[in-house]
Image (cartoon, each protein chain N blue to C red):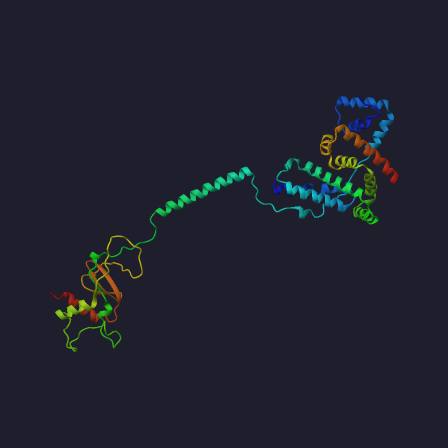
Length: 228
Length: 160
């Protein structure tokens, strides 16, 4: 019930539209009995507080760098997803490591295909005193037997023939510096690409540069063609 | 709320809060400090604050900050220099004479009436929101507002 002791709140709520229909009707009946309060209400409602248009100084300093934020639930989901991706990558890498590497391999010449390797340098004609121990080609002038005789053959075998290293197994190794490649050859020793080539049961080993290959080659071919 | 929501909040409500604080405190320095402190507190707690209710949160914090500052200011004696600084700060705004009369009247109001009047006129709060923010009943909000406006009317007429 509205009285002279509590009318302030009722009138203010009435003016601000905070009452329902019944309460509004009650206020209007009260004001009809107190016209002086109607005038006071109009004066009170004329007061309106405003504020100057002002911008907050230093507003930009209050801003913070925007980062990527995930709620705890999404953070947990992201962690699980990350672990799954990491596990998948690990499994993939393990599977790939079990496969044969995509690197070319050269089969090492096997022992049964290699009989001899002719050291061409040892068959060169002697030149001054450069390598007197190894370069030793017999000549008639020196009173030594000519190429093709049993003595020369024996000397050539002793001086100029080396046997390739033994290959104990059939395993395939990575190619290394110094390994030799196999290519088909004709029957007799010959020169190819400046190298002296000697057939060894269908396979060939080629070695050092031949300085004066034609003359030496002729002697070697004669040696190989003569019957025992 | 996220950092982006916090920044949006600063851009969206910063000026309104400053105008609110400016009217309540009557000087730029105190208003600026109160709003800055309010946003600093919001940043410290922004993870826990609901973005949908941040406006009410800001007004409540600012209101308490202004009340505390006002009580602190009334305890200590303001010297003449401070009064001159306050008056000068208002002269920086256009139409300062009108605002000065309004401000002088506002400064005479009890703090609760002043806050309610600013909430209603500057922020457009309804009675339920004001009651929630200030912790008083809806009926009491009406009483305080009626008395605040009646006092303001009388003080402004005396000033003129």
